[in-house]
Image (cartoon, rainbow over all chains, first blue to last red; front, side):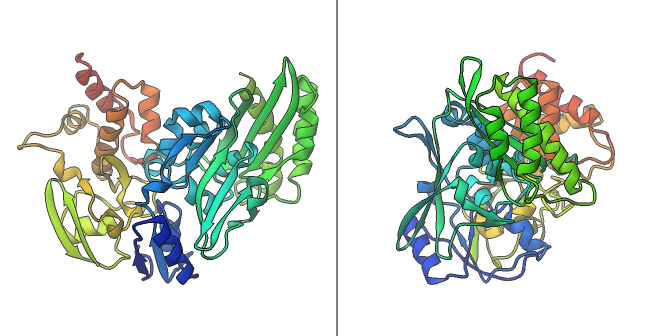
Length: 285
Length: 156
């Protein structure tokens, strides 16, 4: 299957890429291509122009930043993130989720920036970036801005990026002293998340002092679960607290559910509660 | 658009449409039909090759993205008439029946062993998640990969 015809540009610097995107507001950015090209081959997407940023080495770095967090260049691949000692230290749940994306060939070429920009509801890294409280750095020819993950995801395949803009990096806080995990119910054939749950727990002894919970797969976009977070915070994460959180998460996502023939909405909603409990247990283990 | 890449040690230059996929470039422009097209939707892994040393599904990459790259296909695995040890091992362990998935299996497993020289059986099975075989049930493929890892480690 061939995609329909397009004009191809391959800028050699970030500045040139931003200028091309500014001059051609309909242009689509090509990074690893592992979401874009399959969609174009199936004619789910057609684009007049692709701007290939895949070789911009300034967007590939993964570094530990001043506050102990980690800054991941938009072009870092899932395989590089999974293997990065900086990510494993600061944000182990993201390293683990990156290792669950697709298969080894896909992880070798698919990028974090592309994954976030595409925002497939069944993606793993998007849910974890939200659970971890990440910040998305965006540039255009006229300036730069940063958007918290809480505001970045808008709707199905829709994020806060305007024409002419490019994700350059994602910053994640230092969660090395937190307990965190991402678990998913993987579709048995595609391994995409039917339900994915990310949790980040701040602990003081046996008591959880605060929690961040995000759900994906079951929802149109990665979705915070404030009811579940309240149920976990202040508890010792005992069975009663986990059951309360599992009930709460089902209400938290009730307006955001998606489903299909095999996994209807109410099933995914129920499973979000089950996988929330599994995520908390995984974080504590 | 002009693209130039090294494939199995030989430099090639061709003028292609930007929308041409790498797998079509290899098969139709260069005549290297060992690389197979299976699902054509990035799932089955029959089109797996190595680009700059990393396994890639060549149906999910444009030929223009591979401009300047160093590519290895199944045709480049045998050296001087001797099969690659992974090819030998698939033969020895009956790791194929119809053979359609085999080029992709060989390319994926050789790339995997480079990073995981001493894998467990579970790691080998996990590494095959991007390659589908509808004949063997995978069992003999896993045996073939294990045998190469053992031979590399000095056992046999």
